[in-house]
Image 1 (cartoon, helix red, strand yellow):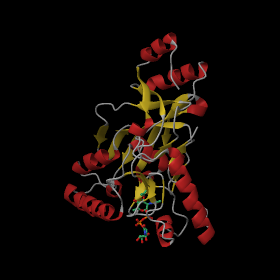
Image 2: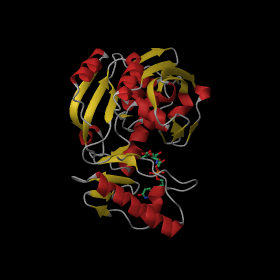
Image 3: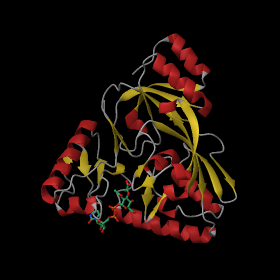
Length: 302
Ligand code: EPU
C-alpha cells in the first residue's frame, strides 16, 4: 500500500506521523520475512483517533506493529499501511513499586532498568525480544512467570470504540499466551506493579534464565520464537523433536536443530516457505499425536 495523495500526506504530517515510504517488513521483523508497504510512525498517542479516522475516510487498511519479534508477514506488496509507535523519552517512569512503561519500550531494557531500581519479578522475560506492548498483548511468559501477573493498568486505543481508554488490571484476563484484548486494540502504555527485590538477587535470576535460554534456543538466528503454543500438558517442541523433524525445511525456512518449536529463516526464506513448513509440521504432529497445534506466532497474510 503506497500513499500518494498529496493532501492526505500533508494531513498525516500535521498529525505528527512520520512516513517511511515502501518500508520492508523483512527489515522490521526478527524472522526477516515480509513484503513492502508504507510505514507510519506515530509520535503522539493523542493523535491516534484522528489518524485512524483519516485513514478510514480514505479507505486505507492498517495494521499495528510492535517490535516485530513474534510476527510472520506475507510476501510482496502488502495491502495495508503499518502503524508503529515511536519511543518517547523517557520510556519508563518509576513511582515506588509502580513502573509506568510506554508500549514501544524494549522489553529486555525494561526488565534491566526496573532491576537496577530493585524491582523484580520479570527475570524470566530477559532475552524475550520485542516491545512491552507486544509482550502485554500476547501475555509473554517464560520460566514460570508471565507479564500479565504484574499489570495494574493499561492505556490502549480501542478501535471498536474509536477512543483511547484506560483499563485496570482486573478488567483484563491474562491466560497462557492469550489476553482478553480485542485483536485491533493498540497497546499504548502499561503500569506494572513489581515486587521489591535487591538488584543482586534479581541479577542472579536474570543470569540463570539467560543461561537456560542460551543452552536451549537458537538465539543468534532469525526466528519468531516458538511457532506453536504448547498444547495443555505437553510440549510442542518435544513432540516435533520426537518425530525427528529438526532440520526439516522448505526453501530457507527450517525447523531449528536446537529447539524444534523454533523455525528459523536460514537465508532468504519467503512467507510462503515458512507457512508451508508450518502446515507440514502441523499435519505430521496431528497425524502422529492427534493434536492440532495452534500458532503462537502472529501471521499477517494478505
Ligand atoms: N524439548 C525437546 N526438544 C526440543 C525442544 C524441547 O525435547 O527440540 C523438551 C525439553 O527438553 C523440555 C521440554 O521439551 O523437556 C520443554 O522445552 P523448553 O523448556 O524449551 O520449553 P518449551 O515448552 O518448549 C516454553 C515457551 C518458550 C519459553 C520456554 C522457557 C511456549 C510455546 N514456549 O518453551 O517461549 O521461552 O518455555 O520458559 O510456551 C515463545 O513464547 O516464543 C517461547 C520461546
